[in-house]
Length: 264
Image 1 (cartoon, rainbow, N blue to C red):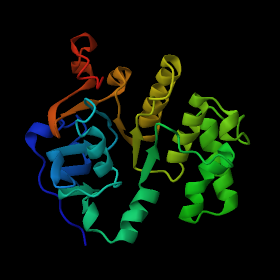
Image 2 (cartoon, helix red, strand yellow):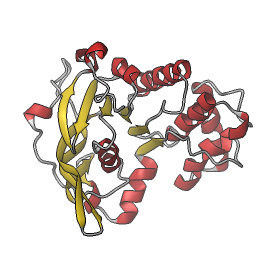
Image 3 (spheres, rainbow, N blue to C red):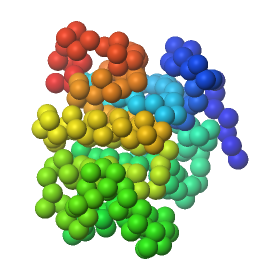
Image 4 (cartoon, rainbow, N blue to C red):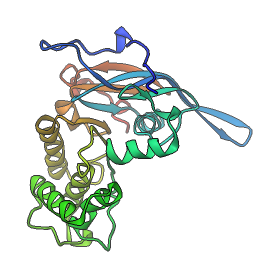
């Protein structure tokens, strides 16, 4: 049964486009996360609400320990909030049965990790095929689709190479291809440029932006990389378990940002 999400908060909403109202794909409503360490309690999230719109590129940034990664994990269905709701396509995600939550993770969300998380004994092609195998796609179709996606990210000539035969940037491109394997509605990228040099990181950011535009896929990045600002439709700053500011990437001036904002 579909659970209707609560109305959007005007303060957190994106203006409607000329073609019509912006469509919410993920809504976090008063999300809180409590960690217990012995007799102590730590509220990593203190009540965050945020609308993520279909087709947008949004970056979540903030100092280390701000709750940025914890919030990112709630949006990606990787962790359950202590309080509050996360809605995906109008469904209260954590009220769904576990098998349906798993289905959403497999079919509707693609994940990109800072450390790539590729399987070392598998080729680039096999790594990209893996989510399709879990989905039940035939080997022939999975092979053809994985080949096309790797071509799309510039690795059509590296299909049979294993991760140790690829550079860091190439491994991240395989990770991006794997995230696209099941044609997800949303891609969550956790520090996608964190292990890359400046030039390669810029190339990965551009690739993500190109995919965002060409595939109309929603991209949510948790990042410290200030280069992400230029590609972001909006930037969400998290501090002390709460949202401090939301603005468009264009509204942030890099020279006005202190080291604390950049998470250093």
